[in-house]
Length: 455
Ligand code: PMP
Image (cartoon, rainbow, N blue to C red; front, side, top):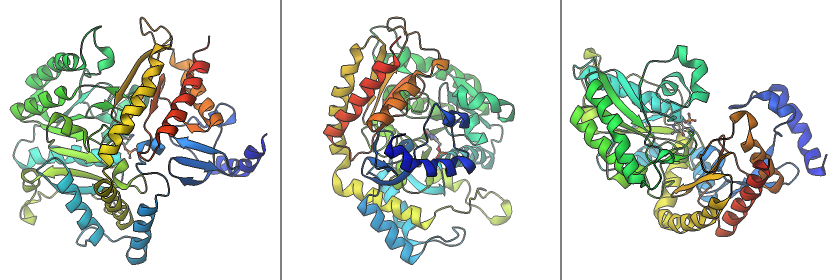
């Protein structure tokens, strides 16, 4: 044991005695995966109890935007804490949520004027699904109660969110518990023909969506998509033209469009919201993760006025939307979110990210020549490297070989938190990363890929 891991050991033992971790086969902590107790964070860096530092290349599950322990967000949360930590949001309100809602409605695609809050991404998806269904019921079209989703999509892991998602790993065991949905092949451009552009491929794949809507629109409440990047599905990407075509088709078929911008919102794809790149406004937009800069759990579903109006009625007609969580609109989380949006306003974040994204792209593209890299792709501040056993045929490494785990472990040894999804090594760092830190992050990934693809 190194001195550093000796300092971590007592925390690891106490953790493993009681804590059941998410997204984890706990037996892996015997040998395959070290448990890393973190004592502090600063900027893109996390530090363990032995003083070893890790560059957080995954923004702690895609939530962190402006670094750990960001002084401006810290101050905002501290100031809020002195005044009000939380108040019931039914019948009561507070300043932080009012200001946040004003800021969100001015930033979001025009016309999304109503904010319904929850406390995590999956809950936002549950809200959007229930709200869409309930809308159609309130306007006398109760038969519209099914949902259309894309293959390889991910929308969270509570039962409703899991049902409208499509990543087998998370879904298959629980399928008997889930509502039935209509699944349409994804426009994922990894599957495009040789020489075919992203736009052509995405446009061609829309035919499946068009025929599903033509057949089922009478019974469909909404189509739900992750705009531009299917993140948990392995950072698979598609062209904005698909969203533009989907918007037009949803209007024509009288079906809602739910944009799950939980992972891609707040600048990740190069624009504030991914939908902007298609020039569209969804009917329901789900936000979470970066909303609070990665500080506190909070989510929101934004909708236009007519959708809200379908619920606005005399009490006795029982048309009100029914969904509530105890911590809805938590004041500390809203204060963190308000400060986060303030940083976007004051710091020209989207412009600076453009320069960072160019640098990230140049560095990551250099991996494309590797004999086991099938594709390097990028959308704004998200970049991904897809490993394959056979570069030419794109035959994947069998999942049982856990090649990504080798990259993960190498990253920890070298001081970077890289967390591949299967055979996909990706980068989604906080926006406060410097070009030098990008170089380090990609270098560590390259070394990890060398190790992982040996033999
Ligand atoms: N939707 C998308 C697109 C996501 O990436 C995630 C989280 N990875 C969720 C929904 C669920 O959010 P949460 O983990 O906060 O429940």
